[in-house]
Length: 502
Image (cartoon, rainbow, N blue to C red):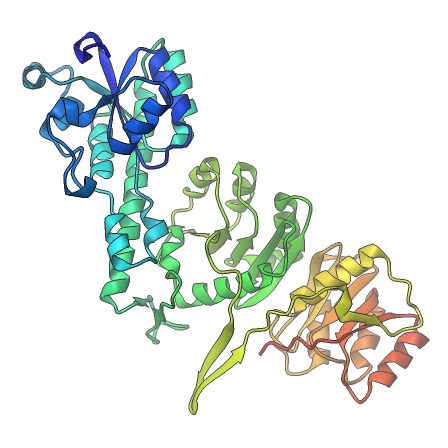
């Protein structure tokens, strides 16, 4: 390997995530930028066939404390931080006899992936050198380029090519800004982790359902919700209830689906071929009720969807991932709580309610609904594949609506939801009222969470464009309900499963 003195400019590369590292090395080699690196990163670079100076050979200081100290050396930081236009700085740097570092490429130990592990493992995943390198180079963005994500190597390539072998000031400033965002979120995760330890695994919330009620979240074996929060104001008691409720809905669906929750109930649910269309349909189900709601989506959010979402006011947005462009757009709503749900458990084994006599604990209703749960009991028994899809969709939704519950559906979109009523007839009236406010569709499917004891609700549904009804059996008046359906040529499907949710 040639002497470092024959190379004018260097990149210090120290990365935990080695994705796209071959691309990075090719960019540096093409532009005659030398590489300085640490331990495992250095080995990886050399295994790919690229030249690399190991940092310990330049500092004359070997890694110690099992790798805890490897880049914390004054020569490194003099090289990164000296102002290239300050003669005093330049003299100090020249005395170090050290390569000039104009690029710092670093990403951090994945602390968030270890936050739920053994305490000792979590502590070891608190990165010290990485954030220090990033912050030092970002501070000196006038002179140094900082790259904090493997996803930005292509941006680096484009900018270097555009500027004939170096980067421009606007790019360096943009990358510095991103770097401080990365280190801020990293430190926030660590702070939240320590806060949970300090509070004996209890997360203190702003207040309970109302400001006069204090509240905490007692963390279970999985991570506290703050470990999944990537943006926004402090999460509240009501936010957590709505998020948990919405995740129950999403657990029913694999196709692109959006659920909008308000006060633990859905005001809009839709499944479509694309996640963007599912959001549009879920929101149009009940725009008024969706205001200030919690939006849960089961696919990654991209730029186009983010642009749609920020046109309206929501409290929380939950998704199994966000593109970088989406995050930049959503960051404009600084109070909007963003939750990355990719590692949140899909289901709960049990539910617990505290009462005066102790705790009521029951098995959670995790039954997986399918066509096998239903039986056609009406004479009008020609059910199309599309109707079956709507029947199943409607019953999956009503399963999670607070009882008494009625859901009206067409094309896998809720058109009216009647929730939490003391009798089924009022729940039906409420669902129809919401439907008539926004739609005029015909041939609706209606799902009920329990049996119809009388025909009054069926008469109302019949008058309002409903042609297919799915409900659990079990009433002593089941025969009367079937007779009414036959007389009026309604399609009636009985479910073998009741899905009350109090």
